[in-house]
Length: 445
Image (cartoon, rainbow, N blue to C red; front, side, top):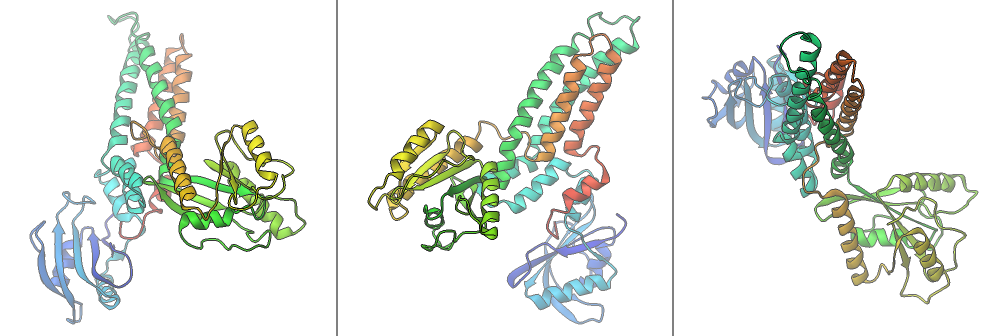
């Protein structure tokens, strides 16, 4: 990290103000060259910026943060300039002319991690906060950035250290004056840890769904009203609606916000047997998406004829919506209600043209999302990576509990469990894992 990096910290395009950030050992030198001097740390000053040829770039508000008391732990400066494309281009060109390097995605936060300003879980919280689209995502990201996950993992690490000390005392000093039951004292600690780690790993899916969105699939036969309902819920023409069966060939995903949580709705191809190669591929994709969804809305045209069978992707507690209740009833409605009862589905007759029906459906979906994603406590893991390491640690501790007579093996299992937990906060982690994590960040962060 001997080089000095720079990058825009605000989005590209026309704006009233744009921010360019610098970090590294030549930060002060760069500010001196462009602004004629570096201001006192943490004091905003207004200066005229000039390039290497002495041409004026812009008037800028400049902030300087002396390391290690900065975001990255290095000397950091920020230029707040007018947000025109020409101004930004001239400033970035001037910085490059000084021999500074354009930052890679996530490089500022990676330097903060490598300089001990953040651990890896907190760094992921930064990325999640930047990407947050809903109130729930914002709260979860702030919790993680604030160190809640790290505090939980630190407590687990202390418990592992305590258990390991007991096991190693029994192994290394069997003839010394240590209590004979010292190894047995480690068992309840390890048992408690296994229970907590298993619960956290199981709950990690909730944190992942808050980040990625609660997935809701609209499935049913062609012309059941899936696209019409999606458009009504979205409040716009997200999907094409025609009387021609099979209009929807591919999956149309529409993000919405339900009760402060992100939900991802998918309008899918009508489920039917077809000889059309393109439509058949759409049906296959529809079944795959529906099978992995958190909730399926099975739409049945209540004015039509019964179907051959209910979709195989349905799960108990999914919803059966008998659509087009404003039209004369056909036999399909009673058939669908019977199938729904057999499968344990909720049932309702609706029309996309009815405001009260849409209000009821939105309220019902909000209740489902809250039940699935809300909890008394924020999740102790928010990513698949966290879940994998928690499960690995729990497996190691379960194995340790089986080593009643071979205490040295039990101690090694506890060490491996501690290493698995350390990977969550980044105390140890392969270089390629770090690269993959920080590559998901935006430029300038």
